[in-house]
Image (cartoon, rainbow, N blue to C red; front, side, top):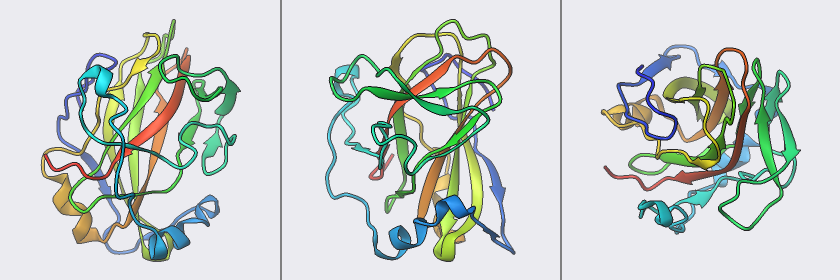
Length: 211
């Protein structure tokens, strides 16, 4: 997959790991997934939170997407942690996610929309010397099963706080998810290489993407 500038993402074809025959059981940290799968649904409305950056899509904040409840709903490893300090654009919240090299953060369970799904967040890697931040989406089915994974993007390193680009599985991948029975997803963030100074805040989801 081609890597573009830090906050301009061009989808160059999904890398899909399909677990077609035997779905792997999701980790115990996903214990709350079942209730979301069986009884949860995507919110009916969202807000145009990225309108100042000429994005008119409607998004909703992922559960604890602003990290204000600590790591609740997130799976953190390799030194990933919730730290003080907020992205500077929205006047709410006081915390964000720190991702040093060697760490991984997997976000809270979120629904996927009837047509497609996109995501956007605020990110910073000021003075970072890493190779970028990989954005991967893990797809789940009923009974807490991991069905597969898709590498959505790699954000280039080195910039200050700014909204990341709208990241979506363009190129036909939306046709695959219903086939494998996915009903929800988790966003996984992993800095690549050494020297990461990545901070992430306010993970937003657009489950109504249609184009």
